[in-house]
Amino acid sequence: MARIQILELPAQVAGDVVVTPFAIVIDQVETERVVGDQGEQPIVTVAELTQDEADEIAQRIGAQGAILTACTMDVA
Image 1 (tube, helix red, strand yellow):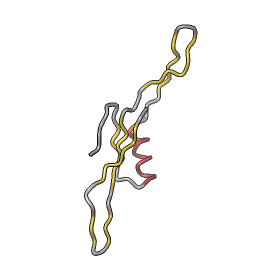
Image 2: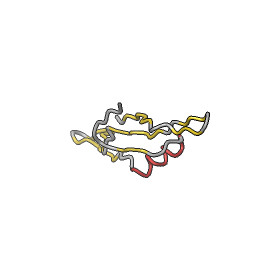
Image 3: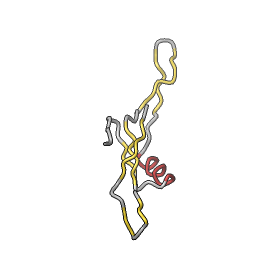
Image 4: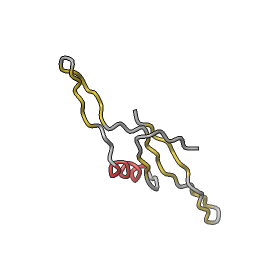
């Protein structure tokens, strides 16, 4: 199952206003998923999240961008 993490970027200061931009990191993205079986054969469907879809999600929530990967990334 994919995970979503927040990566805080350097703060932007303008007078008394401080804005902390962020990016989202979506890792452990599965490229296929077993949705059932037919006898002894699994039925597999593609469950890939594309970079364009990740970028759209980022834009909707106000993030600066999105990092999408199949491996595990720990944001510190």
